[in-house]
Image 1: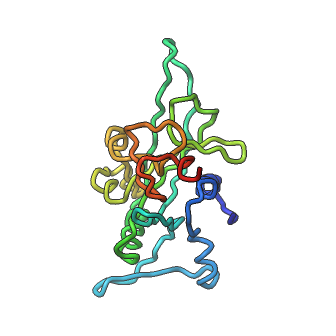
Image 2: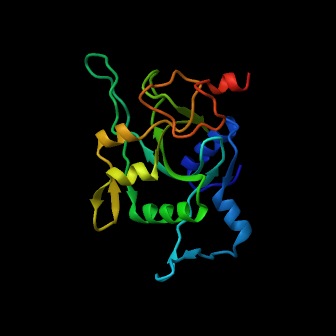
Length: 212
């Protein structure tokens, strides 16, 4: 496994390896192809060159291949309500306009057969209660859950969060409606979280059934 700066990327890469999903870590490929500290630049025929921000993974499967940008967020500690019901934490969904602009250019460069996706990796500060999340990762003593959303769905509903910092986000209702699971899970699926990616064309089979 490649050495990564952020534990969120480590956790997601661990999930890919455990699920036997083919992928390329973009940062490692970039190191092999470009001189140290080199920057990629692109431009349309009538534009000045612009620096192109790296994304994180190219993922291959029977559905369109994915260009994945990982966004790591930490969830607050969950406390049971007085009635014993499980609280549902707010899932932060903000990204920068640099993320949007660079992913849009990458998708155009890769062309048909590739789709840009944000994968939000949420670090749970405690072991998640059963039934609260449908797609869980345990890595290096930490628990994570995932939400994935295509670039096109994100941009269709994004709103300005901070003009100064050039950040955008989705309203909670829009994020709940548009974001889904990353891939089919062995856990009991949440029918509201349709996976954005099916690496094995499982036709509603679990990954355990695929490898049985």
